[in-house]
Length: 258
Ligand SMILES: CC(=O)[C@@H](O)[C@H](O)COP(=O)(O)O
Image 1 (cartoon, rainbow, N blue to C red):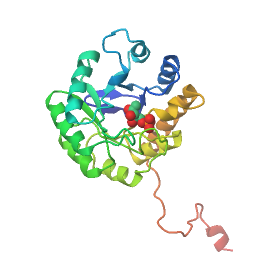
Image 2: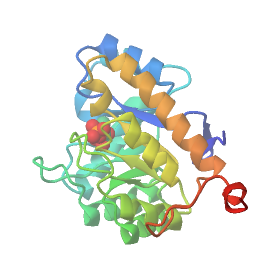
Image 3: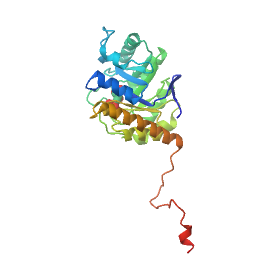
Image 4: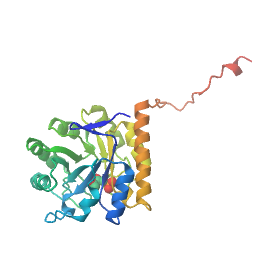
């Protein structure tokens, strides 16, 4: 399978994981390892900045894993830039998942502030991966602003509703010159496979794994589904018929000649 490249770094895995909602740090770590992920996002607000030995971090930091601090909880571009600078200082990485959602009820990303913050953070030398609306125009603007990927939502965070935005994701993928990571709302391995079959470069999953009956097994299932979806995309899916008339899969000539 083709490797994924973001900002010059190669990834074998196209499954990114979030670290919220797990019952324990141990289960989180086992799930991360079972998923085969090489990119894990962690909310700045969950880290004890004064404690370099923060227990949670010990369970996330592994040699092959790119840590992706996220700005979840910030409400505008100014707060995002501040949080990004703290993250760079605390984690020693300039990679950043930019999340700006002013309304905690729906956690929907603020498009205007996200674009503004992306422009500013790119100038400050960050590798910016913005979580955003599944808006093809916005995604193009984020790409022009220097984002390393775009991360359009499948459905609102934590809903497990799958690809509610499928039609728009298709346009975003078709137009993108940078990787498209479908983020949020992916509630089942089949949703991840669907996103990958559409041609998404990767998926980011948190809730569906963390709240599963057996998160570690679910992480394995997502790994398999993400790989299968990507393999199918690279193999080239057959076209769907655009009418309701069946087309025989095997030739009928033997019967017709009798
Ligand atoms: C952890 C993280 O970054 C989330 O904000 C992300 O968008 C995942 O969403 P789900 O929890 O719906 O998978």
